[in-house]
Length: 499
Image (cartoon, rainbow, N blue to C red):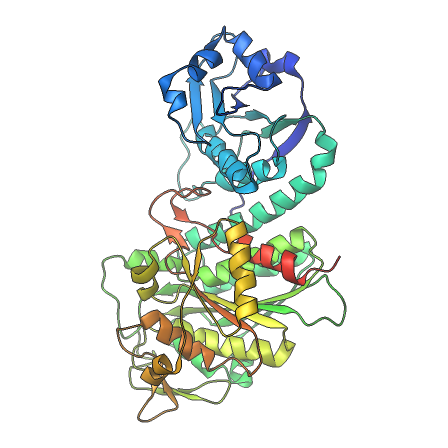
């Protein structure tokens, strides 16, 4: 099946107030909290015979929070199906502007949308918000007989601006980032019978058309490299385990790359340590870390980032069978450490440890970030608002947390320490793969820390709570969020890109 791409058509156009009366679909204008209207707002007010002014004078408007969108259905004097009035201060920052765009996109449906943004300070952020929220995942639904559309991105979005040509670069960047986020969401939303390890690898291989160098390592190559812990996770599945390596070398020729490593368990039954049936259908998202790495690499390539970044993802399926790894087995990692398998449902760290070691051996990166839907414990601790952030390097970690804050993606630093690592001591091997119920996300991070070379700046992101959620977020409908693509893209832009 072809990958599902839903990034909408968005373009900036000159402001022409004379066409407002005939505009089709939906029309959006901006009004300040004090009731001040820009030119487009005043024109819309005249055409609707004072409807905008009546809204501004209402108690509902006076009590509303900034960013609120008021919709007037089938307004008199306009041809649109709805006039959307956004209450936004003229000095609003990038995130508030982005969220306003996302709210408009959430209301848009499949209709065209015209946004008159003459007084908006950050039109590029407005475009990004519109693009991020203009998303659905309906590829597996049957379309109604009278509807040949395939999602809410059909109606184009036009943003009226006084200097549309000058917005070209900002729009291209916004659409590149949104495309990476949507790619991640599409991967995470796909059911496991569609997104097999082979299909996942094929979709990543297709990104070579963007300029990425993509290499797929098959099981015989992984065995030769000594990736035994990764391979052990997939022993019980008929789907072949793979590692996909993506390279984007847009920076200085000799500069060491940033390495991004993602857990790609396309479905996780728990293996022999079988999960309960209730909720197991959600384990289609257990490749979320690999999804974020893939979407980030796509965004970097699409916007031609002037940085060197490598993305590596371990793709496996964790199934029970007569070949599956058993609790009590001892497996030797690529590094050489032996691992006693206590629980086969703690499989993500077995995938990551080999890929992390391989990334360091092959690329000698400047720093490394791994991402995984690793533990339920992080959801208990942080809910669905923040990813757990673990690091051995304060400046590197602070740079990421700053990037995440800029992009409005929640991340919270968690502790590491010898007392936690001691919980992983094994009687018969170098280390156990679990350390008990208490501090489960921290002991998982400590397990991974064993596979970080001395002096290597490293961040582990446990995204189990933020990769896919049960309700709408600011930028996404319920389901896959694409969390992390924007933060990692910002980290690259702020810390690793050359002028």
